[in-house]
Length: 266
Image (tube, rainbow, N blue to C red; front, side, top):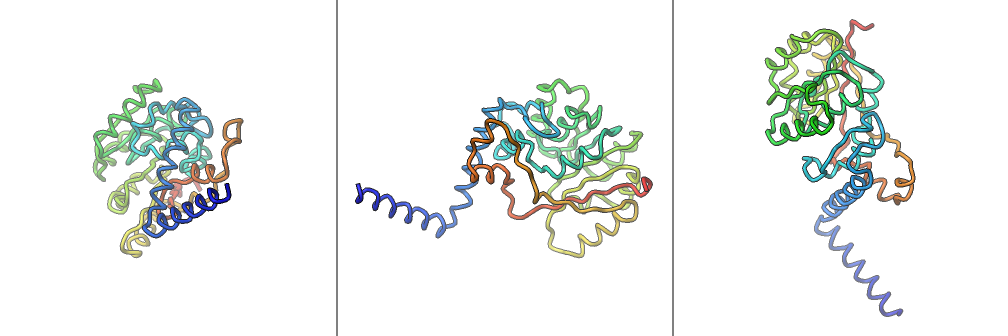
C-alpha cells in the first residue's frame, strides 16, 4: 500500500513537471474548461440560466464558435461587465452588434428586451448562419437583420436609416481603430457605443482613437475583472477550481471596453 502511494506520488510529480516544463498547462486548462462548459450546458439543457440573457436557448454547444465559453454564457458570466452595462442602459430604440459572431448579443438583446430590433455585422459566413439559426430557435428571426463585414460606409448607411436612441456594440479584433472614424462617431453622436479595445503595436493609436471619441461622447473604460458567481443547487456543488475556470474567458490578458455616452445627454 505504501509503495503504491509512493509510486503514485512520483508519477504525479513527473506529470506536473512535464506539463510546466513543455508549456502544456494552458492546453490542459483550456481542455478542462471545454469539459466544464459541456457539463454546464447539459445540466441547463442549453438555456441561459442567469443574468440579462436568461431564457436564451443556445442549443447545441458544439456548433458555437466559442464552445469553451458556452458554460460561462449559460451562467451569465461571459463578459459580465458588458451585460451589466446593457442592463443599466435599459431598452433602446435599436441595437447594432458589429462583429456579432454566432449571435449571442444580437439575439440575446432581443430576448432581454434591450431592443425590439437587432442588426448584426459579421465577416464569417459560418457564424452568420449560426446567428440566423439561433434567432430561429428563439423565435425572433423576423427581428434580426444580418449583414456581412462592417465598413465605415456600411455602418453609416445602416444607422442613417434609424431613429431614436441607439446602442452600438463592437468587437472586431483590432479593426475598431479603422472602423470608427470621426465621421462615423459624429453620425452616432446620439448613440451609446460599447467598444472592445484590442492591443495594437502603437500606444499612440489608442490615444488618438480616444481623443476622437471624446469629441462627441463622454468616455468611460470598463473591464471584466470583477464577477459574481451565480448560486443554485447545481453551481453550489462545483469546486472552487471549477468555478474559477468557468469564470475564465481564456484570454491572454484582461480586456477593456470603452463606453461612449452622448454628450447630448448631459
